[in-house]
Amino acid sequence: MSRSLKNISVVALATVASRVLGLVRESVTAAVFGASALNSAFVSAFTLPNLFRRLLGEGALTAAFVPALTHELERNQRDGAFRLVSKVASWLAVVTTAIVLLALLLFANAETVVRTAVRWGVAEDTGRRLLLGADLAAVLFPYMIFVCLAAAFSAACQVLGRFAEPALSPVWLNLTILSALGLGSWWAWGAPQRMNLLCAGVLAGGFLQMAVPAGVLWREGWRPAFDLRPDDRVREIVRILGPTVIGSAIYLINISVSRFIGLSLNDAAATVLNLATRLMELPIGVFTIAVATVVFPLISRHAAKGDWASLTQDYHKGLRLVLVINIPAAAGLAILAEPITRLLFEHGRFTAADTRLMVSVLAACALGLPFISFTSLALRGFYALGDTATPVRAAALSFAVNVVLSVVLMRWLSTVGLALASTAAVVAQALYLQSRLVRKDGGFAVAPLVPNLGKIAFATVLLAAVAWGGARGVALLDLPGRAGDFAVVLLVIPLAAALYGAVLWTLRIDGREELEQIWGRMRGKRGGMAQ
Image (cartoon, rainbow, N blue to C red; front, side, top):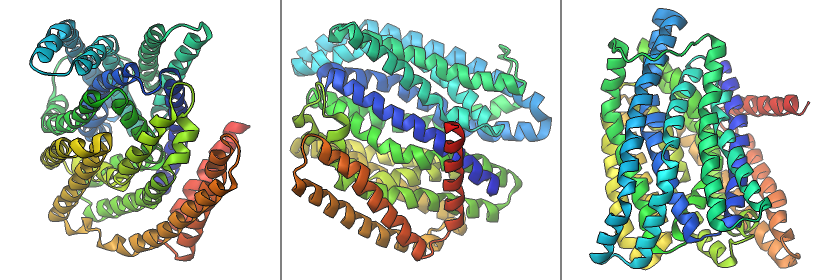
């Protein structure tokens, strides 16, 4: 497990950099466009290629590709693995290009569809926002080709033990977007011209996301070749990919429903939901994705060997690691939502009214953070076991819960209702997945984690008390400008986190040595980069 801990620390550190830079990107974007209809249209339009990326790239394809590539590497060494990479990349390029061309054809007729919808009773403001989103989606959709190929190349890098470069993938997108926004501000252009530059930054970033892991594979010995000849491994990937795509499609439709319902509510809803999601992605990205990325190939190898004891043991270690971070993170985000939002986003065109709306939305989303983290790891457990049907049923359940509750809650709670519906959906999905894992093997039961969960819960209550009391104390000081928000983020949050860690250490939570090793490696990596 020592090597795995090293990989987790590397991925966590790389992901910290990318997530923090992502927050900077969102903060700058909010300052430039605010919670406007144009920004909400961009968020909704960018959702579409990102959804296909998760459908054909990071989600379904990775779940099918990693086990197949792992087997190929063990049986036919690197030559066989590289041939499989070329075959998968070739098919992926053809399929994604066809989807992009079809999407562009549909978007070309968007105006006719929207006008028809308005005649049928859709509000004109909603139609205007939808048409604006369709125009931007036509520009952004080719991004899907780059990031789907990037996901395949990144998965291959992970199987070869190269984790840092794939984890840094979002950095290139964030940098190009920030450069584009900076250029637009420097020239003092209007919002439409700046939006065009933003879209150009997205496409340039997508190309870099593809090129960097491809370069890593090149250095490892891979030479690209266009190869559409099917073989047993490709057929195996397609066989696994089919039901996984269906499950992912349901999940992606789920996200799309929330975003486009938000687009129909008001100008700000889609933007606020997106920013709340971005804040949640920081703790998810720092640790959950790092753990899941490293654990997935590990438990896939255990599954291939039929070593169920090692599989469930590593699964529990991974689950404990993600919950020890994300349960207190959820409490902290919910309690300190206002100063965090105000500090990060309330500037430029993002107003105090937008902050007030986002505080409630972020608190509602934060409740689902531990369940999102759990689901991320549980899904990889099913994929490692070759079970792609259960995730489909779980996604269908999540979709049904989200749609029903969104329609019901949005009438009384508006945007907050959409956030609560999304949280309830992921809770239902997590509970369903865990119950089915236990049916497969009793070793997946959470019973061994209960003592540790009790310790985490106790420490989280103390963290929440310190965070709440600290924030109230800072507010009483009535510090000028943003000084109070800086004090909360730079003083109260570290103090609460330190208390949380000390309590867990005193209570002797399992895996202390693993957490210490990961933290030590992350500090060492930072020191090395600083030098």
